[in-house]
Image 1 (cartoon, rainbow, N blue to C red):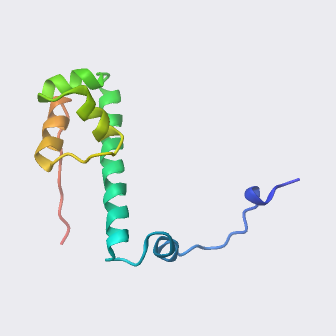
Image 2 (image 1 turned 180 degrees about the horizontal axis):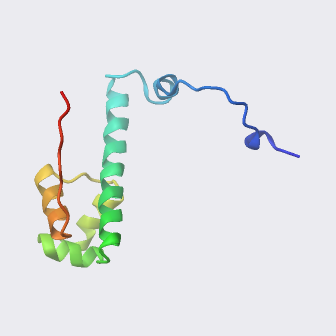
Length: 104
């Protein structure tokens, strides 16, 4: 017997409507704040995954960029978002390169 949570009714969901209901319309202060928090979380996840891939600790990474472990922890948890220059320093400290591309 399937519970309601396990039923797949194959309905399409307009996630803009979901996001609007939860965080407000695009451009509103509450929506902008939610998007910034999401980007900080994503950035922290990218850094944490990269750090684990190269098998170094938060302390080692912090030492390589001249910061403390608490800073790296806050970045990885999405509590703060590093400046772009610091993001580059973090990635370079792990031997990784950042590549940007433009499509016009």
